[in-house]
Length: 227
Image 1 (cartoon, one colour):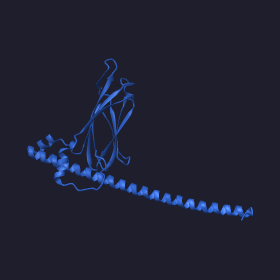
Image 2 (tube, helix red, strand yellow):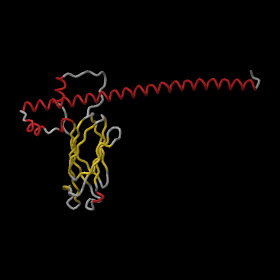
Image 3 (cartoon, one colour):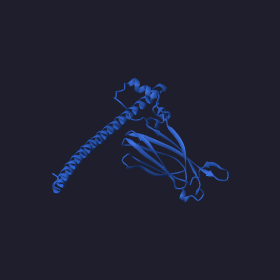
Image 4 (cartoon, one colour):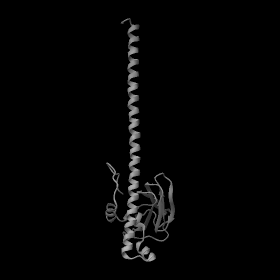
């Protein structure tokens, strides 16, 4: 995802949005290894009201052949998704290969966690599992060939539909970046205010300490009849 915008915000016109839409990144795919009962989590920055689709498939490590092979149907994966406030958006058990879908209702960092039910699989006990994960966000979740067939769209109409969806997603990204910038500004103002009050408190403490020391020294000198 794009980082926090720096400097002054400027509104983007439709040509700029279309240019960004044409340069938009596609879905991201990766794979990782997990051990028995191990959980692996990922953080995904997602604007609000955005659909997310995750596709995964698993492979088990064969010790004899020393290669990853397709997992048996009995092995399952548990998927849990939490929003930025820590609320569970999705918590469900899937098979060795599957697809999960959720829609964000709060902008920010969403935590996506996966772990296997390997404790019930003697074949996998003590072994390794390779998980291929492909996460699609926003307009990348749309199946445009299916949409074109259903709505009987021409190639030009389908391309226009894709551009409109991409522009809508970019506008959501802009709104999310403005939201992040506003939160950062509020945190900065709060921190500056706390630093100011802490500096004032330190100054008051130093003044009171100096006055107390002066009175204490004066009382000491008077008691010793040096003054």
